[in-house]
Image (cartoon, rainbow, N blue to C red; front, side):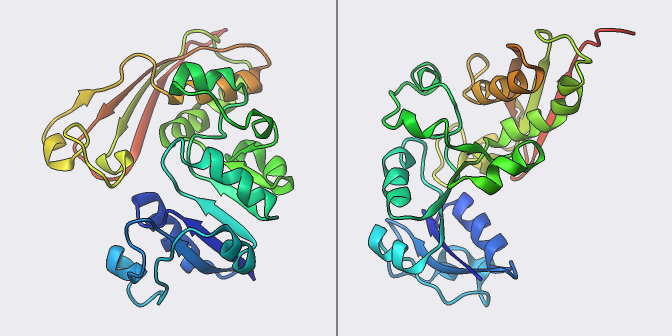
Length: 253
């Protein structure tokens, strides 16, 4: 039985992780940390988990995680995992990171797409991109998995078979993604709060969305040559889910 810890278990990502892992027959969730909910029962923050667990949120303590866990999921905001993950790895733990902090292989891409310098570029090569459909063997053999962005996962899965087979033009790919409000996380802004989005459809981050970096990285890896995409996400009137509509141009009739 694999013992699991979750760092940052009070948000939407942490809640989904808990739902999946508490029902998993081969793992046991032993620790869930949260900054704002220390001492609270997990089911008070995630009412859908009532009856599934008596765990309480605890403070983040690497020594306690080391004692009680084999593997740790880090569900922290972007930029929050980059300093924590090395400490967890040093403690001998395996890590599955849900943030963007280890998704990109080229450290310069963090300057370009996220606006900060990566503090541990040596770990970027080691991290397996957490899409098992493409990287199953790497994931099995690594101590650090970097889970893909939500819209990136939908787009890469749609395109992978065509790109790998060399069937489509490499620089004429147009991606239109529609995404629900939960994708923005549990702390609402005026732009992401569901009542503000209700009954409307709007494009956002029309140029330079961060997920472009990992989509192009993965597609270039599949094709063996640099690939570029045009990508526009749209906020739509739903809570959960993503629909990626991808337009490509075949090389031959």
